[in-house]
Image (cartoon, rainbow, N blue to C red; front, side, top):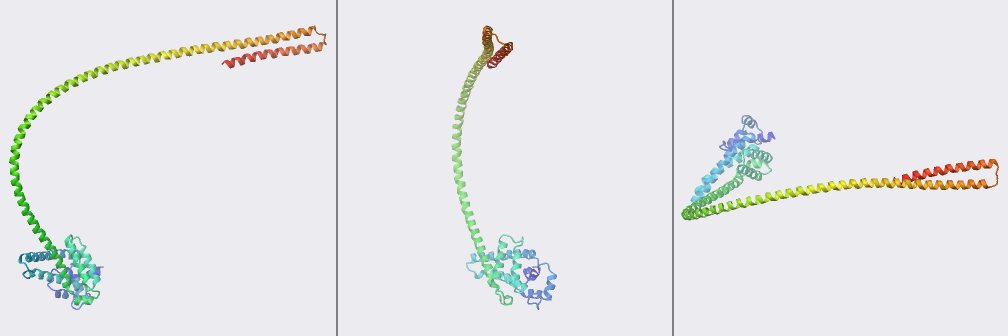
Length: 363
């Protein structure tokens, strides 16, 4: 990359080169391929090989080319033909041919090297807007016109094919700029005439509007005075109505507050009476329940007692029957007495269990 860039010293100094012969001498007369001792000495003594430096020089040259194109277009528009205006075109061709020749000599006609270096130059920050576009246009035109044969490019290249296209672009752009400038000037004259007419019409309108405004202001003042009186009356009436509404609202609020208090008092009284009635009912229910349980216990005890009495009477009758029966052996009598005693105990136990069962059921 560095070697490819180093072969373009001629392009970096194209603005100061009077002719292609000087470029050839700077690179060494005996170095057709750009690699001779003279070229190396020249490269070591200059800083013009830097793409940023070359780009800065190119911005100055593009300004001159644009200026020459502008002179040509203006002259052609004034004179009506191109013949008296060829000086500007010739000046452009001379400068453009030097640049093309310097690039071809410096690159040794190598298309790849020329492409790489021109692309690097056109990407420099110093070239912006139309200047970068012109740089790219110049580079594309030159590269497109170069062949793959380095020898042919060095010795038989037609610079006019590149420079004519570049000149056409500059001239076309300047024609467009000139037409736009003339159109802008015509628009300015038209705008000035419009402004003058508008100013006259505006002055007449202002006088008419001033008279109308004075009349409107008088009417407005009278209407405002009447409106102010009306507003004052309405305001006073509204204040009275608001005071009346406020008093009525306050009275309603007080009445509602008293009503709410009475409602709360009655509700509280009803709750108190309900609680007392509930408490009395619960107490009466408890007393009734206790009486029922007591009555049930008594009935159960009475029934058990009757049952026990009946059982005892039965046993007594049985014993009496036994006395009237034939005499038995002492052992049998003893056994029967023991049996009767056991049966009596069982009867008493049954009565107690019946009493307990009655108590549990009623609970």
